Image (cartoon, rainbow, N blue to C red; front, side, top):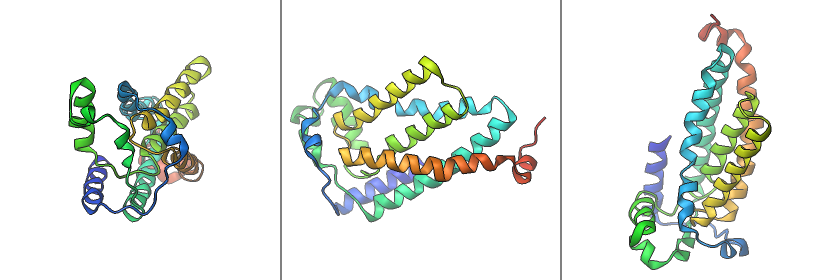
Length: 209
């Protein structure tokens, strides 16, 4: 999924065409917080978690494959929004010029790394929010997280959502539409796909030992 994301991001950045301006007073009120980059990249801890905890039983292995198939399809749906409804994330202008120019530690991460690799497009819905929400929900379904552990994971997820704004990588609109897309994807794609893994086709493909 990373390859088409990058290709689409580069193409839309080259075209430099935006169909909407979703900025709100919230976007202006939320400050840029340089160190929140570290929270932002915690997304990459979610991906292996879904695979790691999805391998413990035969039933869970089948559900793990079904979940990732649904996640893949939903991500491609979001890619289509990126292509046909591009939105420029121009609030990067809120970041100090010195950081955008690559000065200092924050400058390295933003000016040299993040902004070089990721042009200010692929805005909404935020894939950071969509994909991480789905992974938290599947871990909850598998009862990997419960009690204090679940509370801690939801707090970490909320901070991840906040970080997409404090890094000025997304608008508040991207966050809200990301949550909505994630919930729709869970109840109408991921959950039904996992529920179907008890049928004969799945049992034949991944038989229980």
